[in-house]
Image (tube, rainbow, N blue to C red; front, side, top):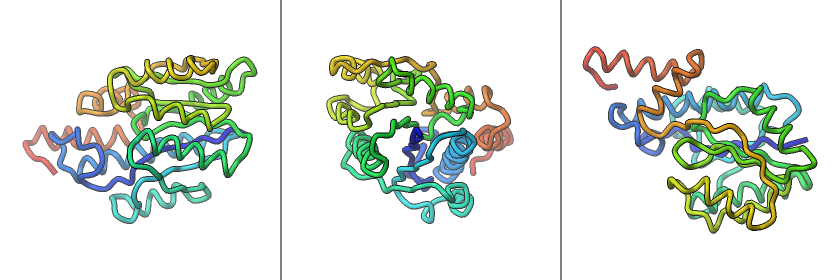
Length: 228
């Protein structure tokens, strides 16, 4: 059974989705982040035949929607993130899963693609478990990536040589995997949420989710000339 690993931050005002400020306030940005995370958790929960795991930076208790997110992850394994930077935290999260579930493939996503659906996640899992594939990579429109799946999660150590959060991260991740002889299959390219334009576009593509509702609420607030 594939482990579906979500790497996320607790939605603490001032610590998440800071590129939404402005137009959002730090608290409103945290509410949007919480909605994105909740949509992601729901998609994973509704994906059949996977083991859900959350690698969390921070504590839900310190952020918004704490009770809601705690309830949404009931039955999940929740691991603390470890490491000095993003690459280190990703590598360690994969290693922690490999220790807990030896021999299982891992599909890792984040909280910036709330448009994900169980159908799309199940398709990614099927691609990852194809005998002709060692890994899957879902590139993002901004040059990064939204998903990394590895049949051997310890190969995530290759990420230590890849600069994170740049316009070349996706390309360099693919190059690092290919250079190590890893057979990589491509997943669909998605837009992830960094700035306000991204939030509007992603909300429009998935208008029924909690994320879209939070974005719509901020839009209404802006139209009447306020920020909360």
